[in-house]
Image (cartoon, each protein chain N blue to C red):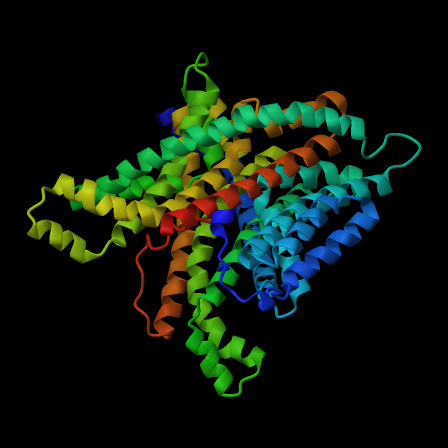
Length: 234
Length: 309
């Protein structure tokens, strides 16, 4: 066991590199996913039908195909088809952002739609413009619901970064595989799974704090760590 | 189809022309345009025409047909668009970007693999996840608080760590003589069991408190209360999200790539390595996924509707 720990200490710089790539993919992917989800989510409730159709088509496409297929397509097919070779990390961020952004768009759409009808009518009765109504009345209430959905998505996205292995990135999964060769399977993978768990736990807890803060602002009761964990991605 | 006809026969004949929905008109126009441009819009145009005919006596049926028409239109539009881009890009000199012969060959190779492994993994994995998830969910509710907290933490741990890493872990742990297809299916099943358990727990929580109290007042034994009162109601609330997890699982099957199960994306990958053609295998693998998950989504929505009532 002690020799394993020594090996682990020697491997720390590489592990650090791996964690760094995983964090880059997670944060970059999450930022892009947030942007994509809000854009597509707002488009899917737009008053102009063609805009709605476009959003639905894009969302269904990215939700319908698997993340691995999209990643392969971006990394292997795009260079042949359009002569664009993206950097591996960037490819990972784009694939993760588009895939989880499409799931997020449904979260945004669902959250906005589940804001009480009376709130919409009240804001209209007060002669608010649609933009003001969305900004001041609907969005703050939808945001609380959205954060709960984003919490699940964030954990999924962090887990999804492990596919980076398939496009020759030396992320955490790869470094753990290297560590396994010098130590034992159980040791290396316990370290790896724990590292991933810590990253995901911090993200989940942070979003839960944000959600509870937003709930407090609206005078709603706060929720436990497990709330919404079983809500499926649809 | 005739059973769902809602317009009563006693309705006055003079009002039979219900206006077409905007969606229907859009479908007619876009299908016609696509038919003129590439011919690929013909199937949805036929469906739109059928819906038009039906609109006179069965408005909801026509709406449903329009819906199906849109799905068909999307699929054919995707195929036509990819084909069009490929044709537009293909150059007379050197290697073509898209070769229909290769595409046909790849399709012939991938579809049986898709049916054999991807579907098998999804079906068996869903069964494992649904059963293990239910057992875990009930366990967290009946165990002493301290043990339940430990179990809950373990479930969180499995739920919040990557499936690929778990698959690789098991791959190196089990003896090489074992079938990785089955080991991988069990790992996927257990991974998703954690998600399904959370859904079950939420479903159990949604059962009215009065139901428990009534069961207690009737002095029903606890196991029977679970079996006959709580679980049937909880399951009804949970089933739609179980279906959605099954779809997620189905899209995660390429992860078995990591453990060398010959599976659709792996097969596409191998095909690419052997023939140095990557466009056709990946594109067709993606299209198969898209079509299959659209069909699954529609099926789940149907199931959901039939369970609510």
